[in-house]
Length: 260
Ligand code: NAD
Image (cartoon, rainbow, N blue to C red; front, side):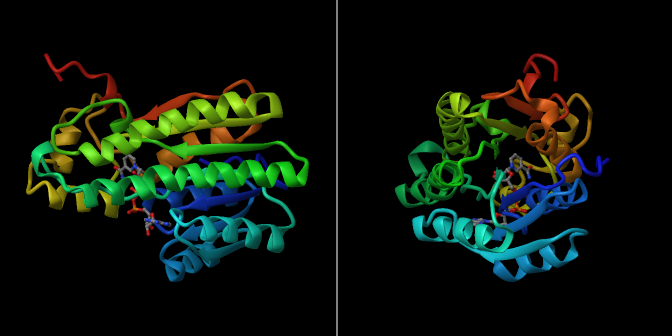
């Protein structure tokens, strides 16, 4: 459910904005009055999402693991809308399903380049942008239930999602005195291309039905349910919240293994 005008006058960037969760976030931020910059490796899909939004929006092709691309999307956003206020650092990739002895360094590095360096670069550019504008701002990182749990088979992905909590904590401490709030949303399972890729890579060991059955709410989440948490944290309803991780996972992260 959107709250029209809650984000009126704000300019928001959503990375991974052509994907399942990013597109839902872009839609809700737009419905709530923000001008939206949809950033994705897939520039065509980013542009399609942008034109589908109810308010002003542009789509930009960028790789969040590239310093030049991150600086470029921020500059393009400021050029188009005059400023930047809100950042949803959401782009991410799944890792391979491999036990520790079989995980290649190349795969480990590939996942960390997007999921960790991409968030680092996004945070750094956001702070540089606020400094140049002389404004405060507000940032949400997409973490994961994998930020809070361990798995024998998803080491690179879960390591990357633990690492973003380190970036979250440092950025929140740095940003607080500057009036910049930084928070994270930790989704559980949501049917998107990323989860489908994960399920395929697992060879049937990790599927939606099994995950849903062990989630207290007994179902997967919807992209709009994750977007609701993002918009709340980006809004002025969350003015005393920074450095927080808001789980949006149907309770899956608090399940005991004794009786799920
Ligand atoms: P998705 O695959 O639908 O979307 C991810 C998007 O990121 C894609 O559009 C892709 O093109 C883009 N992307 C990938 N690499 C990029 C790069 N280098 N630069 C720019 N864009 C890039 O997946 P999703 O489920 O919407 O994932 C969004 C975020 O949510 C990810 O960070 C993911 O780890 C996290 N997450 C997802 C789930 C889930 O169950 N779907 C659960 C927990 C966390």
